[in-house]
Length: 562
Ligand SMILES: [Zn+2]
Image (cartoon, rainbow, N blue to C red; front, side, top):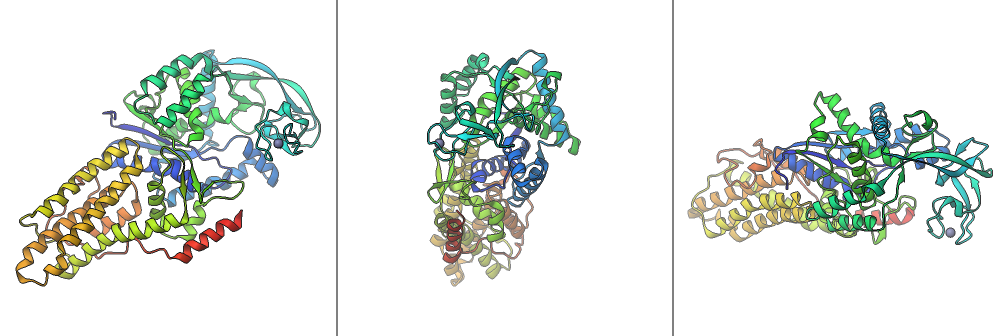
């Protein structure tokens, strides 16, 4: 881990063509939020950014289908997505959008700079043109008969019946999905990023320099892209929805959505600077800054190969220190699918499980698809809530507060002479924050959250072993019970700090219950954190049992939708 204390943390821009689901949350937003909150808690300088990706062909298709404008589609989903993030406590410093005028300016200048430096290759190619609509067509807008299965509504890029990936020219009887009319082929010019020229540099930078720090799944995918030979990639499209190509010959063309979207991180940072009256430059220009991209595995090529090549070609910007991409989360044994409605949508979860965002955050982190695909099941969700959050974490905290209020009127008793059992649990207490921090810095969030619950488990066991509720009955045991309660309260205080990155709502509640006003990670693990004589507030319930019928109705709902 770098010594530098500045972090630019990006989370993949969600595509504003639909709401987001648990797969997105598990893959990108929870890990990036944990990482950001942890580093802030350490006192590091963190800029955590995201925004809606609002360009590209699928949005224009949705607009056509619904007989509205693309802007209407993105307005709708930008709002829904942003609202879900706020309600799940995803602590972005800014949630921007690529339809922002500033973004258009910045993306356009980025292209211009590369153009003026002579980075691009210019190529003519023959593409399908719709004479009725007087427009070139994106692959998705071309329909015809699949050459493989003869399905007659295959798209120019894919047949949805047999799943084959296609080129528009392979379709039999290609027709325009816009006008339904026949198509002609017409010459068009595009600008290409010559990835092949950067192959040696990429290979050295990724496979040698970053070999030790990057995840094996990320390195593996990069290795396979590079060894298959990189090809020049067109960065412009014949389309009218997107960032206009800022040169004369580029009239009626826009930047390819995958060229403009990652620049969205830079423009979101500038928008943040403008709004907060802060300087965005150190976050993107200083070599001291750690740039970290959180993404899903389907975005590896864009964040590890294409965007770094763009940054390198531009010359002003830093490159990512790490790209901790996750694998996929499945749902009840099947791949999550938006089109088949096999998903748990965040806005629906919020309605069905009010004020239980931390439960989902917890379950998705314990089950994060860090090095292979994982499965989310409602049964596992229920078990983890009932037997870990309620029975271990919640139970420990509740016991501590109840004992303290019952026998000491909520006033923290002193710590007296220590016994072996005390020394052992204090060791665990002081070790846990270091261990958890180390795992977070290594992007091993599952291990980290496991150590968090382990500390609560150790607290529970400590109370079960020492049985302070029995000792109260003996007159001579007063000092002993004081010590036990004092230590248990110190564990509670540390839990309130180290649970914050994972379960921010619970942490906040717990901090209010303790009423001591500390937050920094460096304070965690200290056995003197809460002074004796301090008065604890009344406890409130942190977690509650989720009953079988609640889970059953989710399973029924899921199966009925598909
Ligand atoms: Zn087919």
